[in-house]
Length: 357
Figure (tube, rainbow, N blue to C red):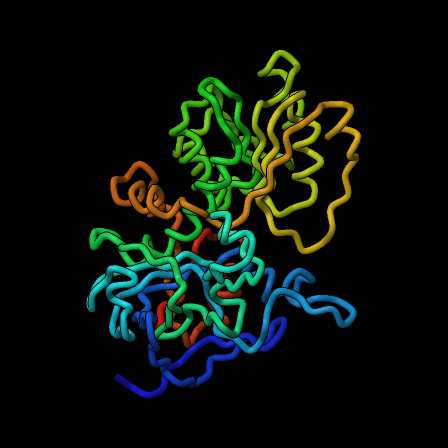
């Protein structure tokens, strides 16, 4: 194995560099994988653009600890094991694996109460120095990583979708969809289209997709949406109310990343409905909280990461009950990261991949 490898290293907003870095050596309980492919996520794009959430403002630190290797949507094959790692993670050399995006500390109050996805330390691959991401030939899974096996039947691109699929699964779970519900997915990009397919498995009465891009709405129809609305051309709130005798939808899942998606949802949802907030925003969102409380008494559910959702997400990809093949766009060599990011930022495609070299 080489001593160094190429990697995409974050240094700051719009400052991601392809650099030669050391190949990590696994210590006790750790796993070294050879990365298959890495997806470019909306949060990667917002981080690259320089959102406050990631980089902070006025001297206050954000979520990113640069320099770190980017990328959190990836899987790979085990190429080296530290002492005790095979037993700890139940893996062997040559196995295909994926780790959950968060590496929990196992000691904070959240970890002790089986709420590991909200770990106070909150080390996530691709954003923290202690958990370098997958945009490199090799990646190290720490001893506390939560590792799952990946079926050989999945392509590298499909395997890279496991992480966003798990996030989508958790968001749909938070919606507490009941058979017959009118469910709205606001924003049918990569994760929204996964949410739509997962929500379809819950047997809603109506499944409605909202977006601004015709090609995404067409995919939503192909994936089973009963109605797909272009919010730039149609009265989405009015249509949903008309379909529901004036009440509004039962469940609204916000995955657009646009503040307008929040205010639209509050207008569209019925009294006592369930509003799921998934998006990461680049700016604060202001709403009338009276609607949430006195006017409608809504259930507001946040959703973060994909806790306990990797096994069902992997199974759904393997058995075809959720299909991501139509969402995959181009695969770029790591050395062409700038092109891959520019293509992703265009909004003209769904999931671009970076392939380590």
